[in-house]
Length: 245
Image 1: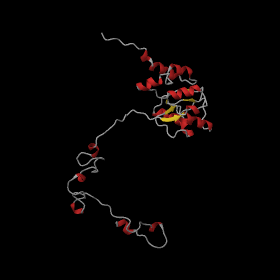
Image 2: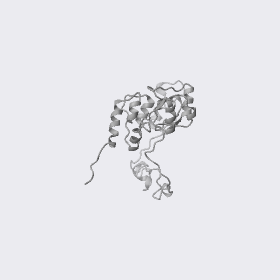
Image 3: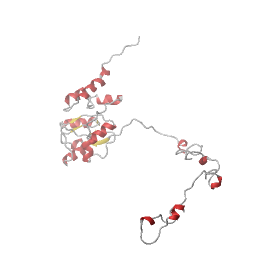
Image 4: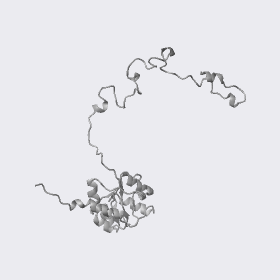
């Protein structure tokens, strides 16, 4: 017990500020290492002689280190391939959307189409992942003309929606733009597609890309920035390159 705790001991009787003290035995004297051999804890300061744990630092190697021998993660062969740029889309079928419309949980119009925000808040999907992909399963149950703006859409879904008088326009979202869409933020400029596969997809009318010239002429709500992006991203089709002599 420290000298301070020894002077102020808890006493029985009425409690006052002057007789408050820690419980007996609850405190111990602090160890002061490396104060010379005569201190009883000097020289090696309780670390022993040499070895990995006697060195400076925490003495703990990184996870997976096995003392220099081949780690177990290197002993097992690896199979398969993981695409670092892959995207996982949340699938939505047409019959599910029709069921949500029948329950009054979803509504759409050309000026206010269904986006990832409405699908998530209505409970039609539980997670947006990297975007929404509209699929054509259950097309025979679709009876309402829906207007939707997913990230991707299958050809069967596009045909089924347009057959009922609806519209499908696929729009590009990166992580930040998708988060802003779900949160309802409009104060930030949306990202444009930069990968070649995304540029080809969203500038194609077959895929109902929102940057295709046909889509820009048919969409009720078009930003001027989209028109400029469409011109810039489609210049490669008309560019001519000098032939090597």
